[in-house]
Amino acid sequence: MARIVCDLLIRGGQLIDGSGAPRVDADIAVSAGRIVAIGERLAVDAARTIDAHGLVVAPGFIDIKTHSDFTLPINPRAESKVRQGVTTEIIGHCGFSVAPCLPDKVALLRDYLSPSAPWLPFRTLDFATYMDSFPATAVNAGMLVGHNTLRLMTMGMAERAPSDAEMGNMIALLREALKAGALGLSSGLFTAPGSYAKAAELHRLGDVLRAEGAAYFTHLRDESNQVLAALDEAIAFAQACQVHVQVVHFKCSGIDNWGKTQTALARLDEARGRGLQIDCDAYPYTAGSNPLKNILPQWVQSGGVDAMIERLRGSATRERMRRDLAEHGLNNWGRIESWDAVRVSISPNLPQHSGQTIAQIAQARGVDPVDALCDYLIDDKGATRVLVTSIAEDDVRTLIRSPVALVGSDGNCVADYGIVSQGMPHPRFYGTFPRVIGHYVKGEQLIPLESAIHKMTGGTAKALGITDRGLLKEGWCADIALFEPDAFIDRATYEAPHRYPAGERTTVIVNGEVVIDNTRHTGALPGKVLRRALHQAANTA
Image 1 (spheres, one colour):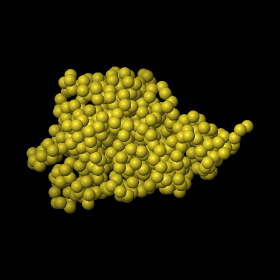
Image 2 (cartoon, one colour):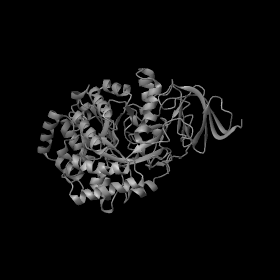
Image 3 (spheres, one colour):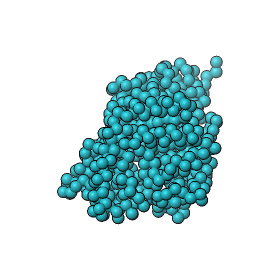
Image 4 (tube, rainbow, N blue to C red):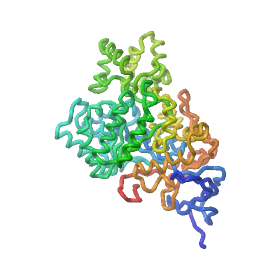
């Protein structure tokens, strides 16, 4: 039998193929960016052989929920993600995308996204150009077009339903993005202007998604006191539009809502039992992250950043905010135990306060926490980003145990150097995937490693409609993660977030090229832009 000639041979690893099947001992041969053979003791001549004895060999992790569109152009090495084993990121979530950006709306989009993308340059950009000109990166990237961005481009921050002409403009921009290869539409119904959209508007856009074979990714309208009603809205969208719906970074936030996760998962199961295509994903932490302005009542945010800042100066605004916050809790987050639960993460204009809580800032200034919050937002020009501890650990465990809840970081790719090392980001930026493996699989033994890998790879690829990634399979793209199962664990914390995972032998391969070689970044940038291509195996460009 003729020997296989290949570029790379991974010899002697424990293969977990991403399907949920038990691990097996086998070799993998890679050539021209694809897996060409899998088997025991392959007879192969390889340009390079990696000794994988003692390592798990898995598909590269697919991070289904990220905002790395804000950092990949600045950090193309994708340090914090690829070192976790991530080989693909899905970007443009929560209704926020940097394209399309119309000529007279550049400043509007820049100001709107300033808390999330403070260092990213903005320019006039249609979606096709955005995808075509995306820089070379270490990881693959699949793009979504944001509903909030479409609304901004069409009708600014107007708090009303779109006119027929405006609806037509949004539909046209959506179609252009989908024709360019966007995977689908994202919505952020928790904050303006996405929160102003009613079902009729969203369903009109959903009809376009159905016609183009694209998907819908939604940050629910409420993840706290009305979380079950908001989930029902997403299920109704799936029913009306007959497209795949992904409920992103699912949570039941706020102390009044702890324990509702089981009920929510049962509703998703019931919907799938009726034939609807709907999934969810979650991150393995009890704190989330958001622009500070977004936790304020929506009436405070109305009209955009400048209007909000002017409104915050008034004593009447602050008194009304106190009443609303006392009665309802934080917008989209619910009631928290104290203002120590809200911690400054990134503060472009007041970086010295990163890591401090609102309670600590208020105490230092000798003022009420609401006054401290308002004054801080004014001084930081509305650009502050915070961490909010509002999720029950038992609910996190419930989602980890669920066979259908996928894993997504909701994090940016950053690094421990350069401009993206500023501030105190959420530790999930550095630790989501090894935390699931090291803490919840190995430490708490909630689920088998094979199940966890499936929730990060094969299950995710199926939800996304990606047909040649997410499994270790002959003919499929060679996105592969190798790690020591007993050593691979997160090291990033809320106090020290810029820390890469533990594990001395971690190796990550993207499209057949070694990017992380025994924890060392090689500098390779082999990532591809993933484009939607229905019923085709070759879905990359």
